[in-house]
Structures are given as structure tokens and as C-alpha cells.
Image 1 (cartoon, rainbow, N blue to C red):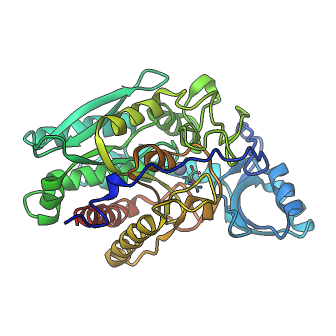
Image 2 (cartoon, helix red, strand yellow):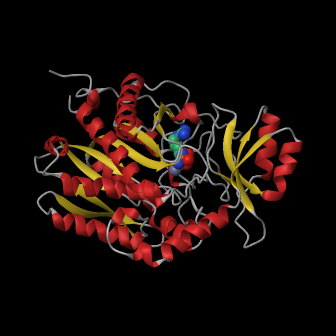
Image 3 (cartoon, rainbow, N blue to C red):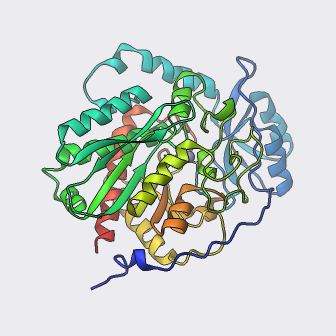
Length: 413
Ligand code: 0X9
Ligand code: ZN
């Protein structure tokens, strides 16, 4: 019997409306951090009018989270501008007094002997080379069903690789999981690598993993943006985009559905620079080609932060034709997460958070009719933002893996 879930692939293609070119949205112009020039402070602002929003935009150095729904969002400003914002009547809560000091503290920790010590690999963040080598180690452990595959190469020529899990069977439906579209969102790299680790190391004991692989091929690609990731380790902890031309393209604005619409920018300096045309970047091409080549029924693009499960559309207010199913699957994942360590991840459409044109989830759904999600991992707030304490890698992996298993189980019905 065909259930709602197994009929997923037969739903007629969504009619895609090109989002109106309202440039107002998220035109963030981001200044490069000048060495030692200013103390950069992450703050949560509460704005009560478009005019106040403009005041914040005018002074902000970086945008950490945005929200159209709530009048609150997290930005980085010069510490000297905080008083000015308050004088304008804007509520300002300091989240990280000195974001560069926080990054320096993390860098020191990573350089310490303790971080280098073998033991639990997931007790600390790992750099690109180490993650890439770990994929080979995982594949070697279970060659019967795990292989490493090269998906392509980045702008600077680094390889973009994925683990492929397949226990056989021709033309299986496929689940694609990726991390690291955004360089600074390190937890997305670690959580996806850890999900792959669980599949390899717990396959024999966990019948839910076996059930998933009996039914689906699963791809896990932890570092879609290797150049940006390396740059965030070596030069600028808060780098988001790829490294095209030194300015970078926001890979999560470079997909073709809603490309160039509201919530993306034509300005190279913007954090949400969309690039010259859809799929202009080898990193988005690599992931797209995998999703197209396989019978992809679900795609989760992991990000941070905010603890949210976002489903289509991100680019438009129009409800997605499969909105009910997308939302019920998001609720199922949120419950699985909550049961793990009690963390609340809020399900909503991408658009409910803020409009974003050219994102991966909209493309996977709109072009491939797959269940497309962005999961924003920990933390929930900006107290440390992208610099999540390493003790939280494993619990974040626990809850993400539960979400993936719950999704696979639901899709199987
Ligand atoms: O803006 C993004 O690309 C994602 N958030 S992040 O803070 N990790 O950069 C969210 C994309 C999903 N879509 C919408 N929120 N509209
Ligand atoms: Zn992101």
C-alpha cells in the first residue's frame, strides 16, 4: 500500500515562483575585521521599527542570526557603537563582549597538548585534513558497506568528499546529509562526521541503523566548503562564505531555486552574496550533482546556530505544496531531539524565520522533490554563537542522529 510517505516521489513538481527582487531584506555589508582596531562585540538587538533596523544595519560589522518573525537578532558591532544604539532607543543585550578574544581562547585550547591527545575524537573540533582522513578510517572499518567518494574540488582545489553507506540493492532511495556549507559553523562538520561514525560503529548493535540501511543509501558529506573551513581555522574564525576571489560567495544563496531573490545580495562584500549565477561555485555544484545523480528522497543541510528545523520554502511566503508532510516530519525530528537531551529545536518554514533566496533546502525540495531541511544546531542563543564548547559536540551528535533515524523510519512507512 502506498502511504503518504512512500508516495513522496510521485507528488507533482512544485510550481516554482521566482521571488520578487525586493532588495530590502538582508543587505548586509560586512567589513573585514581590521587587526586589533576595535573590540568587536556580539549583541542581541531588539528593534521596534524599520528605522531602528536600519540604524543597526548601518553600524553592524557582521550578522550572526536574523529574524523577520521576531524583532530580535544577533549582530557584531564595534563596542564603541553600543551606547549609540542605546541612545537611539534600541535595546541591546551583550552576548559576547569580545568575539575575537573568544576565538583566541578557542585557538589556544586547540593548540594545547590536551586537544592533540588521542582518545575521544569527538571531544574536540577537528580541522579539514583531520576530518578528511577520518572519513578514510571510517570506510576502512566497514568496507562492506562504507566507501569514500570524491564529489568535486573547491575553488582552491581542495577535495570535497563524502562517505557513502550502501548495503547493496539496485537503485535505492537515498538520504543525503551534509555539513559545512558555512565555514564558521564548525559544529555542523563535527555532528555530521559523528553521525557517519555512529553508522559505522553501531551498525551491528543498533537495529534502527540496520533498518535505515536496509531501505536507503545514505551519504554523509561533512565539509562542503573546505576552503572556507580552512580559512576559519587559520585566519578568520567568523568566516562564512567560500573563498572565491577572497571575498567569497555564500554557498547557501548560490542554489537555483529563488536565486537572487529577497534575502540574498549582489554585493560581493555581503555575507549573503549569491554569486554571479546559480551554481557558479564548484562547492554547490558538487553537492547538487550528488543529489541529482542519486534517487534523493531526503536532504538535511546542517548549520548552526539557533536550534531550529527549517523546511521549505525559505524563499517565498507561498505554502509549499507538501507543507503538511514537511512540517509533520519536522515535528517528528524535533520530538526525537527533545527526547535525547531535552533540547528544544523549533520547527518552522525557512521563510518564517526570514526570507532567503537560493538555499539548498528549497532546491532539494523544489527541483528534486526531496524532503529538504536546514537543521540549525546548538546553541540556542548567541552567548557563544558559533564557538560552541567542545563538550557539546557529542550531545549535539546524539540528538542529530536521533533526528536522522526518526526521519528515515518515517520515510520508510
Ligand atoms: O541563512 C542561512 O543560510 C541559514 N541560516 S545560517 O544562520 N546558518 O546562515 C538558514 C537557511 C534557511 N532558510 C531561511 N532561514 N530562510
Ligand atoms: Zn549556516
